Each structure stands twice: as structure tokens, then as C-alpha cells.
Image (cartoon, rainbow, N blue to C red; front, side, top):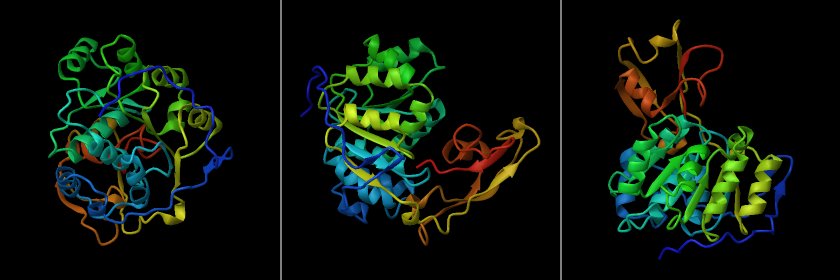
Length: 319
């Protein structure tokens, strides 16, 4: 069952195996190389395979199991390794769908990333009836409040400022939140969200499961893990373990930014996203994809993975 909110218990004993130079030491070596062997629900498995996944990536093989078992987890891996799907699958598996309440909270450093995560969660949970809402700045506050109060989405994905505002004004209830995910923690802290993140932690139950994902482990990230995580599982996916061979990355330079997604017609694309889509020999999505649609599911421009140095269209891993 779900636990009611009570004051945060201090987690003073910081995790061992943390290197201030930015690398963690793994303490979990169990590998599950098939989604079928992860004890996932049938509805979730349908969503995973319908989304295009065939075999879990290195981070998914290691991190999904401890996440769904309820451990606090620190996962260090580079972008494009399948981190988003790792925590999305873990959250969806732990939902109690009959309870109409927010049960998982995900923080992301930017509005765009929060929206992308929401799309991945909704796609993977397509056969489950799970609800997921992006709680981000720049949107209508009144509409946001109405959404949170009337629907109480199972999963909230948002940016720290707006999420804390909704928690602080009691429009977002922490009462049934049992899983808290910090995605791209290093990026969030480098953007100055430390105070909001700490304030959000204080609103949550002391036994809320915490999952932290980060490409690097600077001191401010280590401080978060020491203060708010209890005996966390540490998972490091080294660069040499990544299997991205066979994934074609490409971009199209355009002269004007307004042309991106606007006047261009469809074009042939092999959309590989990352090894989570099947990897070498796996099923890759092929077809004529309108540029506007493609930007919504697998392409970023600018802040989150777009090619640097001018307006361009770049295939970027979201999963």
C-alpha cells in the first residue's frame, strides 16, 4: 500500500563508492537482458514492444530491477543510453492504477525535456491507462491548477520551479508520492535549482524512493545523494559498455531557423534513437516522417541536444 506523508527523516550516512572526481563505483552487478524477465505487467510489456524496444540497453538491464524493487538508485550514464525509459518503465510498473492520486514525481532541468519525458511515459504506458502531466513554467497556471485538482495525474513530470510552486500552494499533493526521480541532476544543479530541489524533498515523505540520474557526479550532486538517499544502489555504465554501433546520427543544416519544421516536406529517415530501440540488428523505424512530427518524437533543436553552431536539425536520443 501507499504511505502517508510524514516529516523527512535525515539521511546522514552518505553513500560509499562516490568519487568527487565525478565517477561512481557500481555496487549492483545483476543484469537482466530481456524485458520479459523483469516481472513487468503484460500491459506495460505491450507498451514497451509497441514503442519499438526489443532488447534493454546496458543501463536498462542493470537499473530497472532495483528501481522496481524499491531501492534508492544512483545511475550514471551518458546521454542516449536509455535512461529515460529506465525510470519511465520503473515508475509505470509500480503504479497502483486504481488509486487516483499522484504517485511519482520526475524533475527535469528544462521544459522541453520534461515534455519529452512525458511523451515517452505516455507511449510506454499506452495500454495501462496511466495518466502523466507535464508541470512546467510558461503554461497557464489556472489551467495547471485545474488539471492537478480535478485529475490528480498518476505521474507528474516537471521543472523544479513550477513543481515546487504547485506543491507549496497545495495544488499538487505529496500524500501518495512514493517515487521521486531527478533526471539530469548535474544539469539541474548547474542551472541553479538547488534550493527548489531541496525544498521539494522537504515536502515529500521520508520513505519516498529516490532515483537520481546524472552523466557526471560533481560535488553538488554528491551532496544531494548524501543528504536525501539511503544506502543507494550505484550503477555506472562505462563508455566501453555502450552498444551504439549501427545507429545512424544525422542532421540537416538550414539557412533560416523558421524553415525547421515549417516548409520542408517529409523525408526519408532511419530513426534509431538509441540502443534501447533494438540496437544492432534490432528493428529500426523507417518511413517518411513529416518534419513537424519528427521533431516531436525524436529530434531536438538547440538547448537539449541540437547541433551546436547554428540552426540545424539533429536526430537526438530521447530514451
